[in-house]
Length: 377
Ligand SMILES: *Cc1c(COP(=O)(O)O)cnc(C)c1O
Image 1 (cartoon, rainbow, N blue to C red):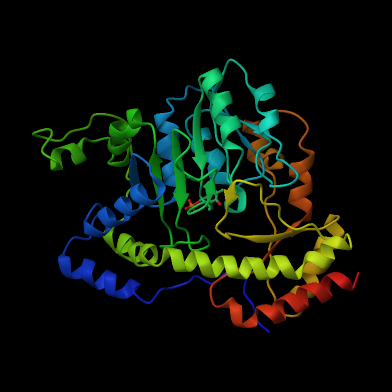
Image 2 (image 1 turned 180 degrees about the vertical axis):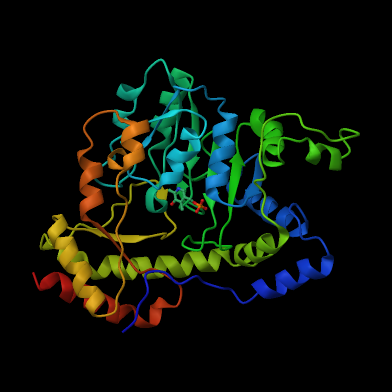
């Protein structure tokens, strides 16, 4: 058996769309395909405005510029996340303040956020791990009371909901990823979602190298010029054309992923009952997008044994993250707000299983291999 951890799904329509972009002669950003994709996001997520970017990292960087951070300002976030969550703010001179995660969802523990707030705190960045929502009502309430900005890292959260609201529609700003390891893909790609209209105009300018080019093309100004700091954050039309093929099939992709997730979940129920593993927890009032299936092992040694055994049988599994508070840069530029025990535990004990469209046919075999790798003790 040879089962990779990830295999990018293609709908079959991508190359046709790219040929259409090619035929149109518009290859730079913000052409017809970009417009279709951003309209889809605005409609499906309910954001005021969606701006396609070349990555989620880029969207987070725009959000960090919009947050108007001064050197030494603090941004609260989990340590159990991908480096981009933190890098975007560090690039503005801000200091990440890491808060521990909840042991059930692996999301930032909302009950520990308030104790991490200081005079320098400017923003909170909740990360919806595995596409399962953070406790957003509590987080938004804390932000309101302390006058903080909330930027959702919804890189993994497209099409998931929290109390009926789409992830990415709740914070002032949010970032999505279309990296090939995510649910809806364009190789590299992302989007900035703007829910607080006050940020819309400036976001557009920052994304267009600090120019008012978008206003110029809408006829709102008669020449375009350098009006703010910025960079080149937009994807070309070839990428947007690819992405549009995926968005058109987003509901079917989501359903198929959920089927795989449900089969895994049912298959490992008895192992959980026997205390061998702990399965993911889904809070009530949340729907998820089957971005990831993971198991928690009792300790690092147990996880390592299972990884090695599965590797020998051709099944690739991966773990993450090395918590940011224990990484070289995180130690130098950030600080842990308090005890990080759940973060450290997830970093040592969590294992992600393969989950991609097309795996269905071999899923029973994969499940059998995982089960026997665990039961060997
Ligand atoms: C994938 C991911 C990112 C980065 O996305 P890119 O599109 O690769 O820049 C950021 N944060 C989280 C939580 C992610 O999972």
